[in-house]
Image 1 (spheres, rainbow, N blue to C red):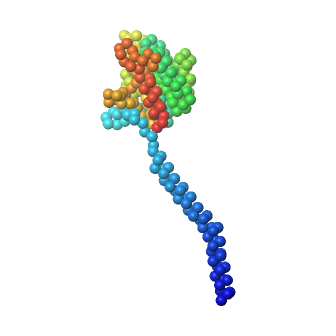
Image 2: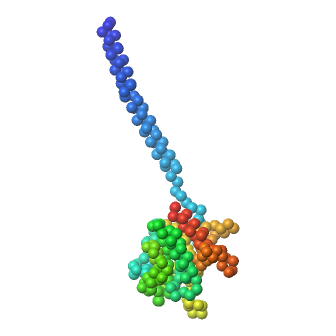
Image 3: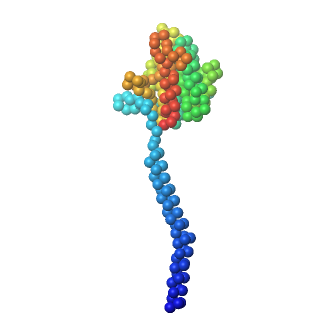
Length: 246
């Protein structure tokens, strides 16, 4: 009987030691695994893709996307819409000898450029509507004149008919040659805002209407022009920030 009792005592002692040493470790591992699984599920649940409140420009019920283009920039390099993929950018149509609104537009764009000087995925696409005169060399000099330094700011020249089609149909920004107006050309003074996926975006105004394009002529310092139109550069910068987060 004594040997049998000693056996039971020995087995009980082994079980007790095993429980003291190993069971807490097993419980700890299970607990940690459960926490990790819970955290992973929580992370997946909380990871929601940010979408701003900016609207898409819809044409015939479809969001308007920038059509494919290919032109030559101020450095003589071929630039296509693929160069702007993954970037938020502003579009303008201008010409270097413009005596009226272009200088105002580009001073405002330089001001915007400087506000986003450390942002790698922000750019500007400037298309000349006088490509016969605005060669890459002329455009390069223009960048120096205005302080254009953003490597993603491309001033582009090319076939005039292709540029006009891109302006009037691709961006719905009016452009035309007119010898009777000052400078010989007519064009919109508005900027288009493009998101990282190449869609034209804009905001809904306080009145509930789509802004669609941003007035590029009136500066933040002016605040308002002689006709009572308010500046929209501040709004444009706010909306650029929103699209950069998307």
